[in-house]
Amino acid sequence: MAVKTLDRTRIEREREVENALASVRMEGLEPSAEARAIFQRYVEGDVTLKEMGRAVDQLLDSQYGPVRLSRNECS
Image (cartoon, rainbow, N blue to C red; front, side):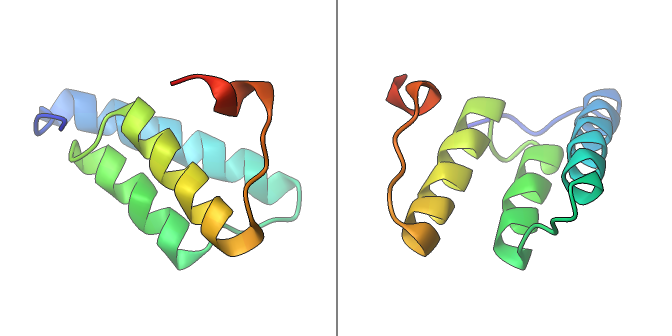
């Protein structure tokens, strides 16, 4: 499990998430409340980037069924 982040790291993580959300929104999509909650856990330092990715994958699998892409094959 991730360690709580320092203010500087938290700001960097928040900026990363904001940039990713802006990109998704430019495509006309809006992340669900569940996905945004996962992103916030990353910003807060409760999960690592890898753990966040796994949590998002699990969320999408539960909503749409498993989709296997080369990125998903990595452990």
